[in-house]
Length: 484
Image (cartoon, rainbow, N blue to C red; front, side, top):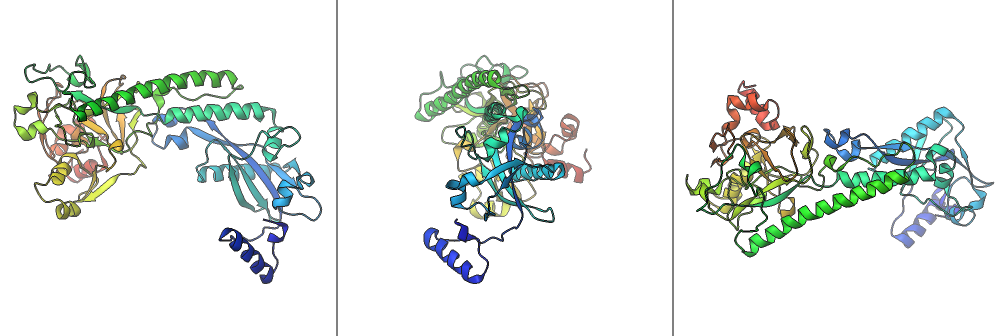
C-alpha cells in the first residue's frame, strides 16, 4: 500500500484496484476516516481460578485482557496515514505521544479489549483506531502478536507503550505472557482419559464391594494379564501412553510454573494448578462406556463410543466373564466436588434424528444396535451419537451411586475424585426413552438397582437423588409428567 492508495475520485480508484488485482488477485476498498490515529496494546493476564470449574468457557473466563496506555501517532508534514514507505522507510518522520484526554483514553482501552475478545485474541495484540472530529472511534485493524522487543533506538509503537508505565513495562509484559501461556496450557490438559479395564477370568469371581470400580485391587489394569490380541495390546499401549504423557506434562508444567513465578514481577500469577484443568482437549461429548460397572465389551465393538452391557445381551449369567473387558474413563488429576470433569457446553456433537436412524439402519443391523446402545437423546427425535473419530470417544460408565452428575450439559464431580478413580454417572440422568437398550448392572453400590432401563429416568428416586442434575431432555420429560 503506497501513498497513492488513498484515492479521491473514480479514475484513481480504478487505477489502484487494477494494480492490486494484478499483483495480488484482489483488492479491498475501504472508506478513509479523516481524523487522529491511535494504537492500544492489549495484554492477556491470568484471571481468577473460577473459570476452571465454572459454567463458561475457561478460555474466556480464566483470562482477562488489560489495555495499556493508548498512544497517538503524530504524522509528519504531508502525511495522514501509514503506507508502506512511511512504515518501513521514512519511519523517522513518525512520532508517538500518550493520549492526553482521559475520557478518550478509557474509551480506546475499552474498544481495544472488546476487539481482542471478539477476535478470540491470545496473549497480546495491538489495535489501531481512527477517531474522527465527532469523537467516534473506528477500528482499523488488530495486529495479533504484534512486533515488540525491537533493539534500542528502533522501538515500535508497542515498545513505546511499554516504556510509559513502570507497572506495565517490558519485564511485566514478558512475565505476564509466560504466566498466561503456562496457565492456558494447564487448563487445556485433560482431566480424564480412556482406559481399558481387564475383566476377571470366569474361574475367579469378581469381588463385589460398595463400589468395585473404585476399590478393586487393579481398577484399571492396562492389559497386564489380558489376552494378547493385537486389539487389546494396542488399546493398552495407547491408554498407558496417555496416562504417562499427562503425568510427564504436569511435571514439566510445575517446573515451568516455578520458573515463571521466579521471573514474574509483583502481582503476576502463573495460573491454577493441574487440578483445575479445563479438559478442553478431552472428548467433548458424553458417551456411554463399557468398563467395570456391569458393561463388558467384546473385541470388535467400538467400546470407546459407549455401550450397554454385552453380558445383558447374552443372558443373566453372562456378566461373569464374557469378553476381554471394556473401556472407561479414569481421573488423571485430583478433581474437587463441583468441578467440571468434562465440558460439553458450547462443544460440537454428532447428531442423528430418529427418522434418519430408521431409514438408514434397519432393525437388527449393527449400526442400529450401536445406536440403541450408545446414543442418548437431546429431544424426542434427536440423539447424540458417536463420532467417526475414535480419539473423541468418551466411554462413560454407569454406576447407581456415581461420582459425577450433570450440570446442564457439563459433566461435574458429585464428590471429590482421586487420580486413578473411574468416572461414572447414572444413565437414568441422560439415557432415556424406549430406544435405549437395557442391561444388567453389577456396580456394587448399596443402591444398585441391578437392571438399568431406558425408563428409569421417570422413577421418583431420580428427583430425590439427583435433583436438577439431569440432562435438559430428562428434566423436561419429568416436568411434563409432573415429577420434580
